[in-house]
Image (cartoon, rainbow, N blue to C red):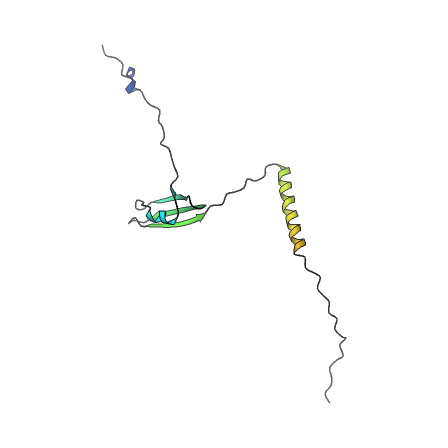
Amino acid sequence: MYQNYQSYPYYQQRPNRLPPQHALKVNGKASIDMLQMSPDSDALIMDTSAPRIWYCVSDSLGNITAKSYKVIEEEDEPNSIEERLAKIESVLTEMEGRINESHVKEPTIIEYPPYQGYNERG
């Protein structure tokens, strides 16, 4: 007479899904000034107008202090010995070119007449 609870589709367990996660993004300093944060919190915020990240901290009253940091993309390090040697050779060739461009002429040697001694006053 009674059916098993699991036979009903609305009693079946659903897989847990995490909500999508996004980075906070702003468009310049003006957007940071309009940002609202809860008191005693902090956040890293990406700037879409420049390669910059903002670190925002709010105090107990909710006033925000923001500091900006430049973002520099790292280059991948060469993996093989051949790639490393090629990179070293290119750097050395560039340095050699700089040295040749900035080569200074040898200084001119000035010859003075031989020392005659002190003139005696008489």
